[in-house]
Length: 611
Ligand code: GTP
Ligand code: SPV
Ligand code: MN
Image 1 (cartoon, rainbow, N blue to C red):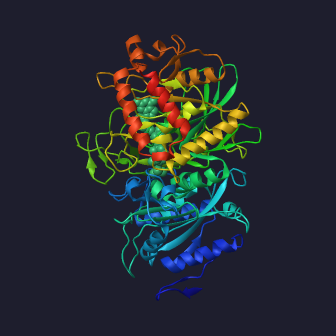
Image 2 (cartoon, helix red, strand yellow; image 1 turned 90 degrees about the vertical axis):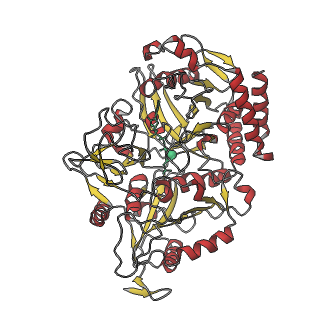
């Protein structure tokens, strides 16, 4: 059956499944009338549906099937060379009041933005199929889970969302007349004229990733890459969720989640916030160099933290898969990931070997003699550019991870014992410090800084503030986000259940410009100290930046470290810390009166400690 819509295009009438809530059906019809796709497909999340989409993508040239003996069920996608990472400059928080977006977000008036987008989306899906993709963030039916529906004209985005979320009919059934759901509209922004040949990676030079925090609504135009397009992830689970969480008393965090069992059998759960491409996936899949400690994976990118009925902070991983950075993933750095990527993976922008397998910088020490690079060009080890794009990624189901914890999808979440903040810091920040209390911990999170990576546009290596590793992901004023952390912590504290907070830095460099700390598996020694602190077993010494391990409480020589290097990792350089504190004063001033009193007080305390 076809129906006539705006203009003179026709499309199959909305074939909504019986499970669909009337509001969803009406919204899909409105979106179809605006974007004018040739047809509408409601996704059920079945294996057959996924395979059908993949077959279509192979035919369209978007995906290349890899050598099925080497990588069964796996495919390579090559994006348009200008569509390779998140675009922070085109990401908008359109709160009604500009002050609610804060100084760190791009803001636009929601009424004006809606007009702009209505024009832009008018007919944007012509010649394409609109997929309706219902999804649950968090275990289906969990009180901590939230649901959304994305419409998209990108089958690549559909299969990615299928891996990254609980997608399909089960999620759709969660939307009933009285509960909230998040609508997300996505287009690659490349309508096809009748008979026009498609390209392998349709996208547009014009890009908008727009959030309406009060309406809990997302609109994205022009990109098919990662967080720009898989709207369940950063747009929903962080930006919109941070606004929902602020109103409902829970926290959306850019954090990995770990389950750790100590040698005495005590189980801990840890949440850690590191900025993009700063080691969350690595830490989430840590294989401890101290084998008496067991580390299991719960999540690698996003955590939703909610105070539980028992007074403890509980966490779920709202995702169901990993969209991980490929370069740097090798047997030495992340053997769990290497093993996880043996089958059923979609790789994007990595290099192709001559025998139909994948390669990226860091997978093996020796690069193959010949490759096809991420742009599809011949590549040899002499080539001046990397074979894989620095932000090339793998998309894989969490269930494929050999270290996934049996509780990773517990609908009740897991209780958090320790919170860690970390960044890429060549100087100043010690290997590990413990905050004196929750307010000091919030100060460490609020003033977090890190060197930029390839995960978004911008100059790699440039130091910038990335409070709570949420700079690109907050749907609220960042100052409100800090206050929210303080409020949640104060409640936990009253019940004596506030998790301890720590700061780590795997990336401090020596005078030779090399990393001082071996990192990766050896990070387990730091994690063990952290959890021994929580367990009341490890001693500390007070420093101006917080509590540090006493001599002998971390066996650094077993990690191959010299005494000199170890001391350098904890060096407190008064002069350069004072310079950083001056910068922090400026940073806090840029937030005006939105800085919580407790954050100011912590800053004053640091200034005092440094004198
Ligand atoms: P997003 O998915 O972008 O949010 O990032 P992520 O934090 O999950 O990033 P990921 O774990 O993929 O970070 C990868 C980068 O961090 C690679 O360049 C790794 O080599 C580097 N890395 C991870 N752990 C360590 C470590 O302990 N030491 C050093 N030196 N580098 C590390
Ligand atoms: C990040 O940039 O922090 C990511 C990748 O996790 S993306 O989903 O593209 O935002
Ligand atoms: Mn991330």
